Length: 492
Image 1 (spheres, rainbow, N blue to C red):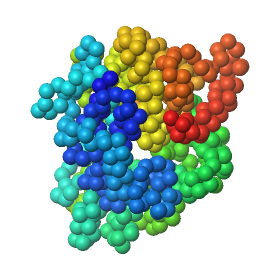
Image 2: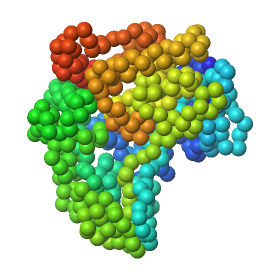
Image 3: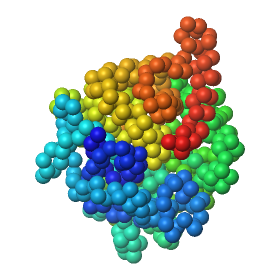
Image 4: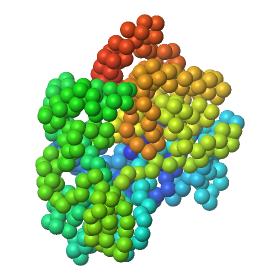
């Protein structure tokens, strides 16, 4: 098959590695080089990976001798991706400066539409890209200084801010916001920073991540605490009980007491403010000394001042917005017409395929933010199961399988009363959804058969049995599966 991959970031490269030996692959990239989010000119100053080097399994070159338990600087990660692409001579298959503007479904294939170029015919299109478009809020009033998304605070911009002693307002409570704050603190410029955030995020303690790879085991304290975390998230995802339930508060106290989850400015025990980030405890403690305004947003801008919703007025020459990213996709036209990012989670099969367009696959996060692992899993499923099924059974039969599979996916979510979520703009995934999707992908990668036979469904004949299963058995099964899911990816 001719497979066109849109995007040459971590997800795009991971998918192609699984497919390049068996299919004709063409990679399209809007930028001048590979890397996506990790293209150096798109990385903010001193950007590092959340996790440690051992988690990536990439060719590090001279860095192989470095500590596998440390963070990886973005320049090193870009070099590793470049070596990875060279191993399979992937650059020969890449077309840079090619901005895709749309996809058009046609009989037996898909046409990829790009600026200034004729349509490119493909049998299957894999559309990647999850965090490339920064989201900057629309503010009331006018501002005489600079408003920058975090990803545009490159080293030269950062150094100019420090050299000219510009006053900075960092907006947001995410990992990117913490990185901005930490960079200024390391540069000895903490006095010039005001940190404003609506909510402070909880994140996983980096020390536990190090321990997992240090001991080479997933059955220690770190694994037990992750299981607690999965169970807490499950009950919040399925019961909509927020943070007042005795069970969730008790589990959160355990996670907080053990310092498995940490937060720079805890606001109660709100696990809903957990987004999969991995935090350095030493940094967190130092950040607490910085001037900050918690529970606030910018209400009005005027000149070089920002009036907050709390009434405080902050002087600033630069506003750095670490306020998330948009995951917008190009529209699909032709026989099947839709705008992908306008679809709800229950309209997309496993977060990957809209059934009426079975030749278009959208790479979305399937877990809490580990896009490299997710892409490897999806790539193995495409190679071993989905593409062979599409080739042998044909488009119509495959579409029928997808529609039936989507119905079962939604039925399982309904049986455990799983909440809906924003598939396109967030890494926040309900535990039941992650369990269903990853379980099915792994099973079909092993069998090579795209099946829709129901598995592990909640019993419906006996109300008591169904309640016990939903309350206790299902969350533990889901947590244990997701806890050890890395093994399936490594096997693939």
